[in-house]
Image (cartoon, rainbow, N blue to C red):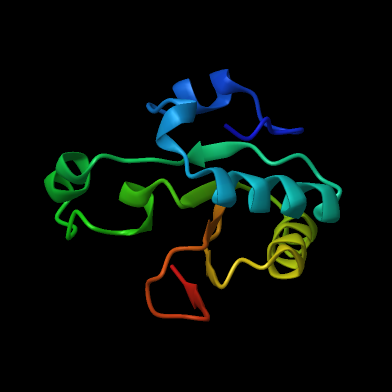
Length: 117
């Protein structure tokens, strides 16, 4: 199991999952993105069960259900830029940008893509 430099196990339990739910390659990429960005990443969401996703009207087979997606909190445009810059440099092919978070995923879903919420 990959030992992340910037992310501790309790950061995942805080958002309702465990470290073992997270894909190692994805966590390595997230660690690299955080290093490049040079700003703290506060995880809002990571792994979500297919049942939870379906309860919200989603397919139940998205990147979060694979342990390959992260929603990172952000409150300023400068912070958002740093997160996106780090994510692109680290190789995240799918990025969603919202007012209060940035979604990063390296799933095999269609991409590369950047979208707005």
